[in-house]
Image (tube, rainbow, N blue to C red; front, side, top):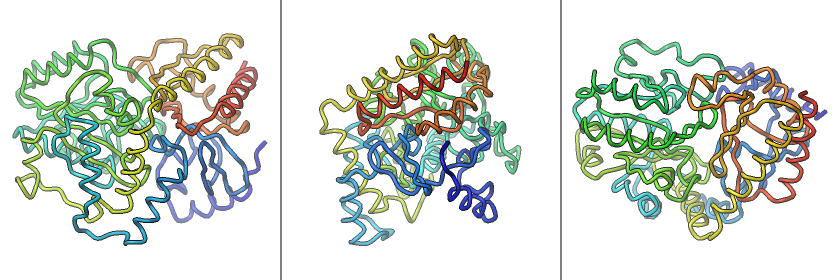
Length: 430
């Protein structure tokens, strides 16, 4: 059993100053009934807590640490940038260099704006879509999370789903009345929705590969038909690639599936894990954004020089590493096989959804293709599984409805230890 004395002491004090003792709800470990380890540092594929416990990290700061923690080139870029100043609220050349890297990787982003978070990027993309189309309605999907802005926190996934509160108090009904919720992977339902309200729909926003109700893959032609449907009604298609961008492929899910959205939302991976995001798309849409157009959006920390430097370094390393995505996929396949073998030998029902280095293990024998089927998972079994994995030094998300992330820094030794842990833990789950 791991020692958590110092972590508990710090967490107990934090509970007196921060809601739930944390600055983001899922970190509180309430859904798994544990005290969270308080992280002291990370290096490569490992993180270390205040009590000296060491873990192989499959959370990776919820995705962006795709190179691993404290990558020497990224840290070097951060230090160099910080020595010249941490914030200016003024243009810098590196903003342009990062924007060029992003636009070259994702050609649909003909023009883009850097912001400080994925939430801000999604909120701003919605505003731009409404400003461009002159329409009010926005369609989102059950279980897809697009940040915590008022109009989008409706049947959201991620931490809201984990806490059992798919909506939020404090949001006036008028804020969410223009948000329509559709079923992920249900194109027939979406077609009917557009027949009823299509001429008033400004945009459809979607995680092209949903990763906030656990990983749920789009079914064959779902995204293609969605692209066609929005085009017919003059609505914009927004891909929220906060998780999939630069992780599924260098050009994101839209490169992988060959779909060109009108707008794209990106998050912290473009800052090497630092607070940054971006939204962008077709030039004529983005030219509606101030100061060129009437859609207002601003931020003193947008394009922050330290975050931008980390992003340039991160994306450059990915771009110039020939086997990058092939190796991540191989690591993902290795873990998937370990889970399948352990579950089979122990007679435990699981469903694994995986694409490259993103994966979810659902404790259900039913295929998971949407929000409702994700909810069929055995949460009590997940809770026990999570606790036992943590005891074995394997750090995964404390929620059935989050994904497992693999970084390029994970080694074969990490895989071997993880495979052994999976085998041991599943034998105890019988």
